[in-house]
Length: 329
Image (cartoon, rainbow, N blue to C red; front, top):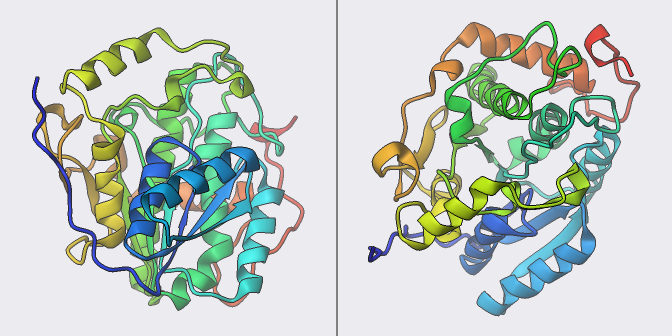
């Protein structure tokens, strides 16, 4: 199937500082490359510094004069998130956009983060929540945009309020959907609280559609030695033009982070049939994301579990984490 070129125009981003998580490969690397090519200063917080260096080399192949640098970050460790926050606050540079793109998907067995959370809930949701909290002063200074990358998996499912860490029964797909639903609700509540409190931050949601990336590939670090069977079909459908490519999948988040027409509290994804490929367009919120009561509840639960406060009269630092029954290890 022949492809019709799909792209957007990115404004000049000279003088803008952008932080992109999960930028060592896949959609995150594509985002970082496009931002650097538009003259943004791009910060790549990565867990694997070797992969990060390779990513920088690839970015500079496309944008030889790119201003891009690495920082260390392991989103499955709240101490690591706090350390990155301290480092960036110490640099005292406003952040104009934070793209929360990193994630882990469907480990075959239940795994725990360094802090005792189920790996997907702790990494995809709580790690990013903590990062936003630690960077809040810099985002306010830059009147920054926070773009939270979701998934079509958030269309269905729910938050298990009694057992968010899946201690009573683990299903990788349900846990993944829950992590993305919780993160989407948090992003919507961030938009509401920014408006109410005058923080000057815009918060938007995005999703890439369906695209072949390393999320479904063999990943020994999450206990998956081989590619999942469905990734072969996704790769084939992408080649045939039925599904998107990395180059198109990054466009909704790129639009949310850079377009003057993107608006706070909105959700952007592919506009094509089934919203699995195509150019970026505003999407209807998935049903699990529509409850403002759930959003406020996620916000409170996230503050409790991470130990990170969104009060603007204090700077978050490493402090003992409150322990709840659902996260005892």
